[in-house]
Image (cartoon, rainbow, N blue to C red):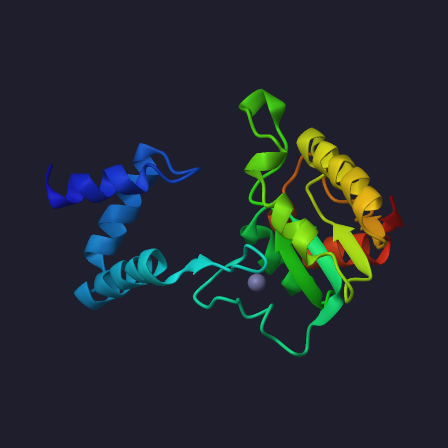
Length: 195
Ligand code: ZN
């Protein structure tokens, strides 16, 4: 396959990008400067070679521990549990959470064969100790996200003495946290309720 076809094929594998869009993007890159094209290639190459999982929280970062886990300014007493690392930027942009994160790496979904042992739950239990006062469960407002939240609430309530809260409704049902706007997320945090 020639260079153009190769890139069209690779871009076309990305979510939400059909063949037509992949072609448009490819020719857009071709029309730009060679330097721009090489910068894009280097950025993708760095993702592949430098980004790793944070051993403490499961976030994706080029540092391990990640920038949140190593920051003395974050409140280690609050732990916000999210499905994916891609949820974190949306919460950070909302500007009113100053605690630490824990990334599950998915959600419970029996139909897809995803059980508790497939998620980063053991790591969560290891972190629930003295400094943690509150666990805020911020899984998505989907059927699977709610089931995951209920599972975690039962597990944590039986194994640790912490306050367990859930983000307020108001986030789009079935919608992903990562696509919610900052104001909506800030309100969901402010209105979080005990589970
Ligand atoms: Zn981390």
